[in-house]
Image (cartoon, rainbow, N blue to C red; front, side, top):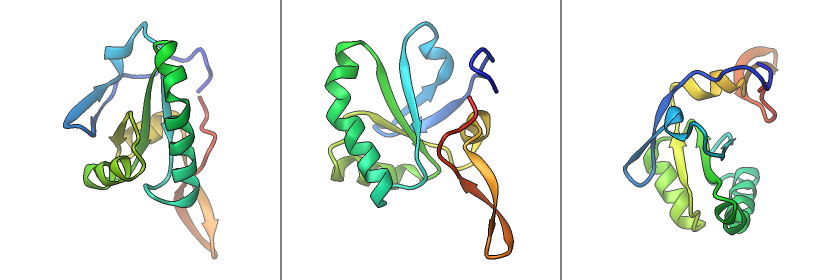
Length: 122
């Protein structure tokens, strides 16, 4: 998918008993960042970086959302543990992951497995 491609609308459950629908943000700037798993070292660092920069995003009227395949219960714990001020979206069926190309087949110990990779194809 290239930067001029139209991203299809999708909806995902979010923390805070909310739902995220892409079309609701049409014409408004926002960040969707994908990460493999709650409460792991790299993903925690990434979330904390977004948390620490969050006032700058708010000052520019840019919404921030994190997306992983974890369930909402895990997201709520992760969000509370690190005081993340933005909502986390649950994508257990990999709907959004597929749209943005963040899942790839990898060879792991001689076996092909579908794994999360950073740097999707948008």
